[in-house]
Length: 223
Image (cartoon, rainbow, N blue to C red; front, side, top):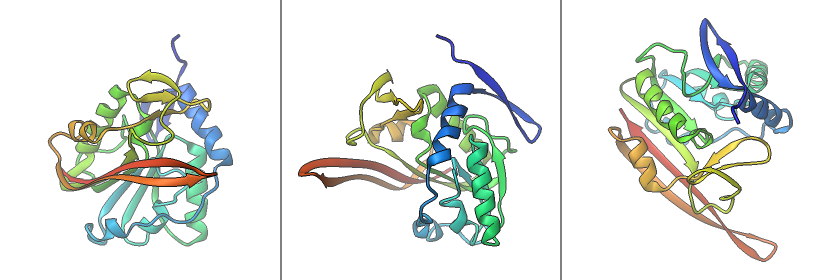
């Protein structure tokens, strides 16, 4: 069945976004709590203060908030509702950032605009074609020697499974796609990038007497 699509206007830039994806994320963020600010210590260790930073899939601003204290930041998300919450929160804390409603597969920015792209838990929500388009866009908007900070789910994660739509990709009942990566897949996807750090983390969790595995893959790469 062909999925409905909708035109999303982004500061003079039009892109074709599947309607179900937008609606699913808007619904998700309506009940998602902001939570505490995310740690960015590993970012500040590598990225000089004042750098131009793009936080893709920034959601309600969990990482955008601490980033805005050190960098010239732009928060981008497919959900306008999430961006509204991020904007309001940063405003109350007297923090400033720019915002863009857009998809990672079609970034509404000129080439070589940013010194770093923060991409935490975002690429895993794209199809295979979308993932390659996203990496191409990340490369395009980064300046020479620009950095990518990446985090995704790994294929051994306890949440792996569901209605499989592509290899290692599952559609959940909330209408959101989840892809679970292998380490080799990340290296292939970001071929041509220089890997400065690569972590393949397996964390054992105990819940009601049963053991579960959380599998996260993170990397820092340079163009």
